[in-house]
Length: 135
Image 1 (cartoon, rainbow, N blue to C red):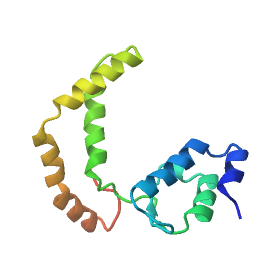
Image 2 (cartoon, rainbow, N blue to C red):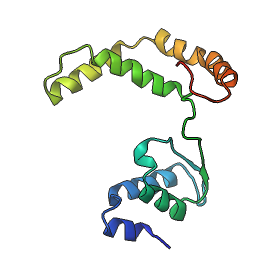
Image 3 (tube, one colour):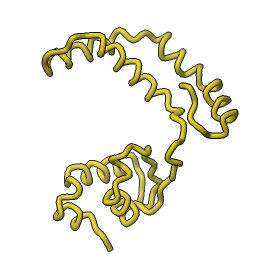
Image 4 (tube, helix red, strand yellow):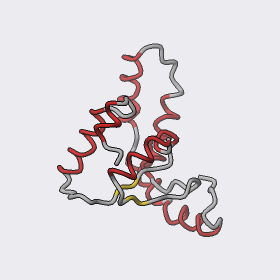
């Protein structure tokens, strides 16, 4: 079996990531085996990651590769990113400052609007039979 230790020794995954993964699961009261879900970000679909997950987290929720993003938090990150890109950022400190400032400026109404858009988003997913939406 392909183990965590083997992957770490081969330098394929970082020991801190594995440690944090299992510590977080324990803190959340998740006992093995638990169900695990990740998105289809390319770094999560690398062969080595798939192999590690198969051997160490066999109880996964699988998502189709083109599944529409119905996570309002992701859309909130997009909103924040658009606000940050309006600045001419020249340093890490400036990025941190702008990020905090723009985060504080996000109004509750903007978040509520994202959450309230979910029924419409879900309807569009149904109408498009699971294909990408315009959101």
